[in-house]
Amino acid sequence: MEASMTKRAALKRQMREGVLDSRQFTEESKVRRLPTHSGWSPHPSNDDRDQAYLKTLKPKSDGQAELMEAIDHHNLVMALGPAGTGKTYLAVAKAVEALEAGKVGRIVLSRPAVEAGESIGFLPGDMEDKLAPYLRPLYDALSDRLSMKRVKALMAEGLIEIAPVGYMRGRTLNNAFIVVDEAQNCTYVQLKMLLTRLGWHSTMVVTGDPQQSDLLPGISGLSDISARLEAVPEIAVVRLAERDIVRHPLVASMIGVL
Image (cartoon, rainbow, N blue to C red; front, side):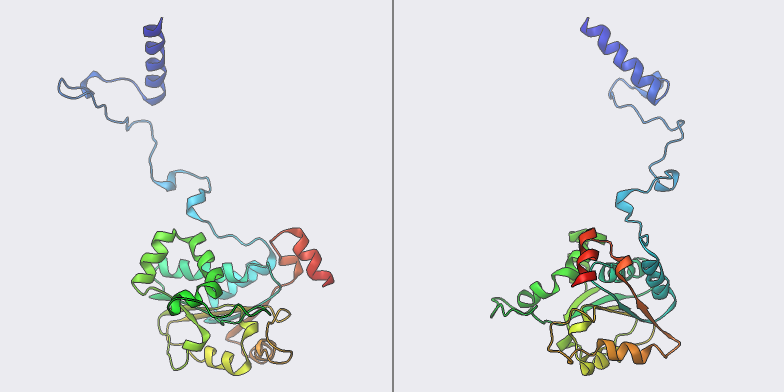
C-alpha cells in the first residue's frame, strides 16, 4: 500500500515537472536536473506580480504623486505637510533609488538633534550612540527599503551618511542625494546654511511640518524660507494636506481638530 502511494506521488510530480528522462540519471549519482522545457525562469521579468521584495514605490495620494514627480525633476524640493503624509519615507526611498541606479554617489541624511519638548538628559556612548535616538526615524526608513545588513555595509563604505545639522557647516555636497528631515526644528539661519550645502549633480529634499515645531514660537524658519523659495522657478515647494495622510485614519481626524 505504501509503495503504491509513493508511485502515485512520483507520477504526479513527474506530470507537474515534466516527463521523466532516464538519461538524466547515472549509476554514480541520483541527482536529476530541473526541467528546462516548462518555460519557467527564476528571472523576475517573467512574473507579472508585484513581489514584496521588489519594494515597488507607488504614490498613495495625489500629493505624494506630486512630491515624487518634483523630486524627479528638481534639484531642490521643499516637502511640507502634516504627520503621516510620507514625506520622510518618500524622500529616503527616492534617495535609495538614485543610489542603486548610480545617479548619485552617496546619500546624506541630516536631522536636527532637538528633543520633543522633554529633556532626556545626557546619553552614554560616543557621538553615534548619542545621536541614535534622534536619527532613528531615518534608520527605520532606510531599513524598510534595504536590508539592515546592506544599510550597515553602505554606511561602513561611506555611501550612506547620517549627520546632525550641527555638523553640516562648511561642507559642499557634490554627487549626493541629501535629505533634511524635521526641518521645522531648524532656525532660519540653520536652514539657510543647509540649503547652501547643495553641490554639483546633487538633489536635496527638505521635509517638515511647520505646525509641529519643537522650538519656541517664532524660532522655526521653515515657513519663511519655503515662502521665499516658492518664487524661484527651479525650486519645487510641495504642500501636502490632510487628504495625503496614509497612517491610521484617526491621525487625519485628530490633525483636523487639534
